[in-house]
Image 1 (cartoon, one colour):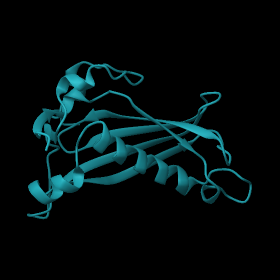
Image 2 (cartoon, one colour):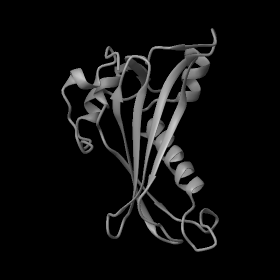
Image 3 (cartoon, rainbow, N blue to C red):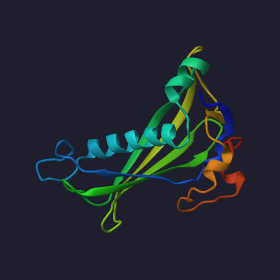
Image 4 (cartoon, helix red, strand yellow):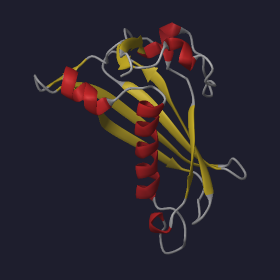
Length: 173
């Protein structure tokens, strides 16, 4: 079994996580374009897979062992171009900002062939202590089997790196 250690959340702020996907038949409307709900589902599934696979954060395990869950409290979507049945997509996500009571996570979905952005999804997340039933401050660390150094080779998202003061959990924004 891999050793689990607490890593600073700041070590992944602005780091770009990328995967591929292909638009399936059931994700499309009658015109053959990917529908809004499918973009949202793809963004959520991508981000949660990245959290587990690349960050090493098992959110189900954290909920059971520490009583901490991450809740999406707000979703903003900017649909910019269609994606059609069979098209290959590039999904990019990153933690954009961390504040005391919220975290901003962005997911950009692009067509692979021309890199045109189809949709930008912005999640505002918060954390809850399930044992007490109350919202809590965003944790400054997260349990992972990875090392902080594992994230150093990941590319930066657009607009990053930012000075730590703009990303700090101590920020009151």
